[in-house]
Amino acid sequence: MKNAVGAVTSVLLLGGRSEIGLAIVRALVARGARRVVLAVRDGKPDETTVEALHAAGASLVEPLEFDIAAPETHEDAVARAVALAGDLDVVIDAVGVLGSTPAYEADPAGAAHSAVVNFAGHVSANLAVAEVLRTQGHGTLVVLSSAAGARVRKANYVYGAAKAGLDGFAQGLGDALAGSGARVLLVRPGFVRTQMTTGMPDGPFAIGADDVARAVVDGLATGRDTVWVPARLGPLFAVLRVLPRAIWRRLPR
Image (cartoon, rainbow, N blue to C red; front, side, top):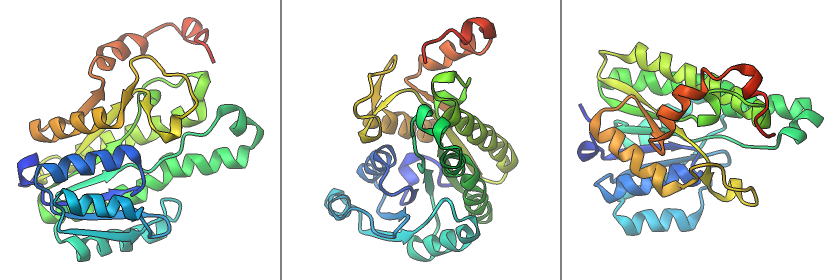
């Protein structure tokens, strides 16, 4: 089995421009990963990123065209990743958009599209990945969920609802893979400082992309099923999940 960090040699990143996803890839390359496939919608990852990964020790950094909103293409995309990198030791699902709740309320069609990007499209992509990992008999699918999906609040309910769907799907998929040698690592970050959150006030316990990467590497090494980032969010949400709805509704928008 190749589900510990010391055994990772190949990585597929779905969402090859994601700051969090790339931080995880960099951390894995620093620990010995050598073959990296960056899947992006137009098939053209940032050249600076590619050069930096090569400089860090990756022997192969290959681009792959991938559109999360085109589920009929996902099996072929994952098969192409295998053709490029061989067995997939770690697959990171980092595709997503944040958006604005007022903008979504003014544009229902746009809100629905964001739900495809944040949840529905991941169903076919992750099932395609799971079949490859199951056939291999090893490998970990890292799914970037969010604390926003642990209990949806009015401030970001379109985004939170999609993440809640992804979170539940990833848990079920992990259970379905039990005993196969493959597994799912579900990651629930809180507020992460990235370009996507630029201009927004920091949420409680705000972190950076590298903090998420360190937590993922630790989770891979220890065989965790779920990691909260920061870890204190786990016990906090154990309480928040049972908070009376009348109180939960009063949280600021």
